[in-house]
Image 1 (cartoon, helix red, strand yellow):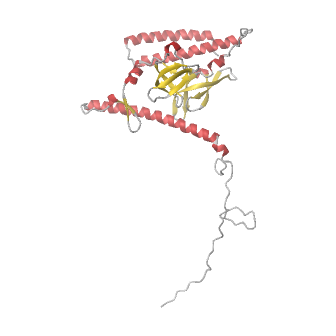
Image 2 (cartoon, rainbow, N blue to C red):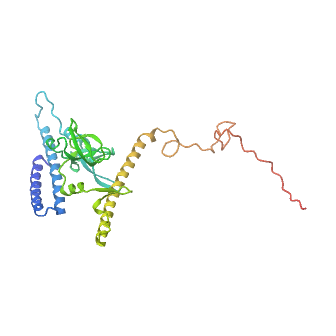
Image 3 (cartoon, rainbow, N blue to C red):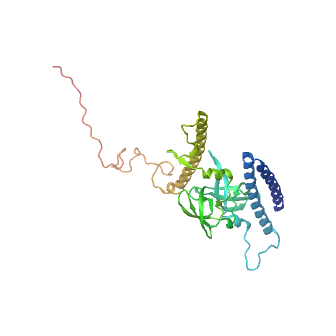
Length: 322
């Protein structure tokens, strides 16, 4: 049974109470990893439930008999309000299982009355349909917090990942930002920036890194110093291996999606229009051993322009004794 807007408001109150208890626990133990994870999860659930409640309330308003728009104005449907919004979806395809940033392209109700939306993964153009309850909308910061010169993170449209940037100005679409690590000047949507990273994320952003020849990014504080004890060296080596394994998996996931996307583009364009014969083209390859169509045709010769092979006359070999 689909939840009403009142049910969602009741859930919101429960989630906020739980969040208050978690924050009280963090005041005593600020670095407790389980509490930090629980706080982040609750914040995401609260943001998603707030969007769901607004969507459900608008849907119920449209469904009321006699509901009409104000004179001279058109009432926007609830679905149109979230089309184009940035969200997070859990993408699973073979070995790839992780959350990706995406954009909502369309919304519909299925035969059972369940709201569904079609999303496109940012940077990969893969589309997939999800239940609306499975989608996490990215909650944008207030425009007053995003003035020129504000340091934040934004989604880069080429790969859909978050990168450090500085806001240059506000635009009709959202913001114009400068990615500090790469110098790219891009315009992004209003819901493709985020502020207020956790203390651990801020510490990680402030740590200087060096890049290995293989492309791994390792914090400089993990460099092995000759003055380190054997225990410290072993600990640093273990942390470096863990970082490399994590980054290697991310690179493999990105490569897998890029290969899949390139193959889909190829099958949609070139494979359908090429004129070659053979496998996957729908055209049978002509055999050189088929029967000739004309009297002058020769089996085994296909437009070579050469005559048949000449063989010398066979003679009996005789051995002469000397």
